[in-house]
Image 1: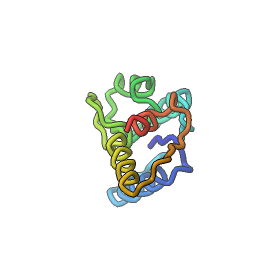
Image 2: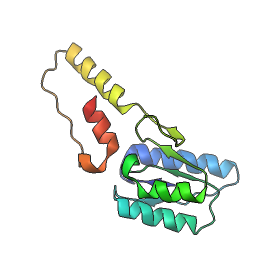
Image 3: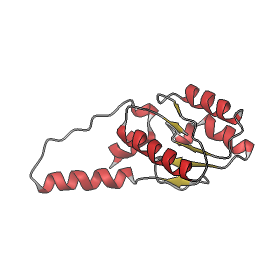
Image 4: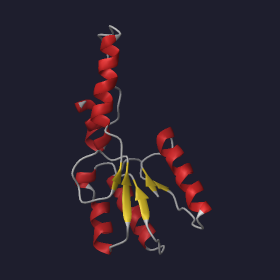
Amino acid sequence: MLIPSLQNPIFADAAAAIERTAGCNGYNVLLASSAYSADKEISAVETFLNSRLEGLVLVVANEEKSRALDSLTATGLPFILMFNPVKPTSYSTVSIDNRRATRELVEALLELDHRRTAMIAGKLSESDLSIERQAG
């Protein structure tokens, strides 16, 4: 499993749930964190590919620019993207519609008469999740 951060509770919780479910089915989980770095993503994927995996769950920093996905696709190893933006893709994906969720959040704040809102995020150039949230 490849996630961008061990510090983000949503990724940590997802990793724990996947590890628990995998263990109940006789599998072990290898875990790596990319720190939202494309170079670390490709390095982790190369390490995983040398470990005779049966499949991979991953979150990439930017699906459209990911060399890691290109490498995985070339190998034929089954993989699924998790938490990457919902958009037409040839990859299997389990995700949240970040654009819609943010729009609904802002609408709820406006209904409560909150007029000065802000979004705090990391580098938009490195996270397609943040880009989708900002667009909402």
